[in-house]
Structures are given as C-alpha cells and as structure tokens.
Image 1 (cartoon, rainbow, N blue to C red):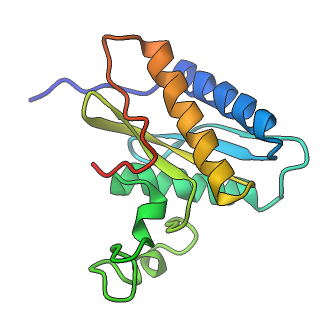
Image 2 (tube, rainbow, N blue to C red):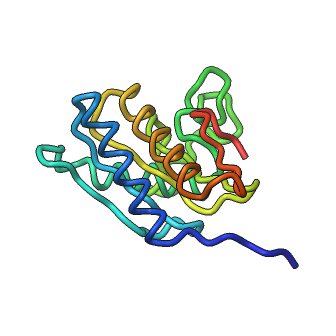
Length: 157
C-alpha cells in the first residue's frame, strides 16, 4: 500500500485565485476549473464576461488532464497520441463532451502523484497555458518546499 495525497477545496481556491490574477494581468476572460484525481469538480469560477461555453470546456480539459495524466495540448502535437496515426486517434469520440484534446488542461502532479487537474478556457491558447501554469505555481507556493508540484506546461506522467 502507499500513502496518497488528496487535493482539497482550500488548495483549489488558492489555484483559482492565482489563475484569475494571471488572467486579469493578461486581460483574458477565463473560466478556471479544478477537479480531483477522479475528475470530479472541486471548484470552478467563470470570470465576468467569459463565454457561456467555457465552463463545460474547462471541466472537460481538467477531467482529461487528470484522468489521462498529461497536458491536453500534448494530444495534438505532431506525433501526439490523438493525431491521425497516434495510438489514441479518436479517443475523444469515446467520451463525447468529457474528453478534450486541445490546449488548456493540466494534471496536478504533487510528489509524483496525479491528484487532480486544472482546466482553463476562454482565452487564446497561450493565455490558457499561462493561467494554468500560474495556478500550478500557486499550489507549489501554498504547499511549500516539502512538496514538489510539476509546473512545466508539458506535463506527461
């Protein structure tokens, strides 16, 4: 058996606040979602003026990143698993509305364990990445040096 870490509402709120601050600095209007290791919603915030489609997209991105343990944009990079010759081509069709294979989803990896996911939707792709990374960095700051949070945008666990 092993000891597992559990993402809780306190950490999700820290991540959401940091994501919103980053989005405001970028002048992006985003929806930010945090899910647990099972892909279940812990927290979601839709900024004023965010598109009405962005909550569902943010949830799907966070779900995908958590469950598949990789940043969602890695699915579609050249040679990625969801490309036409990749081993996961068509995977998004198996879970319609739940599986996202575009930019804005990041697994939350702490001390080598995937404990959840972050989904960001509403800005340009580079904005979604910057906001997601800001949320991950805020978690690292909140947890302190006793924990290691992966904060690189290209997470594949």
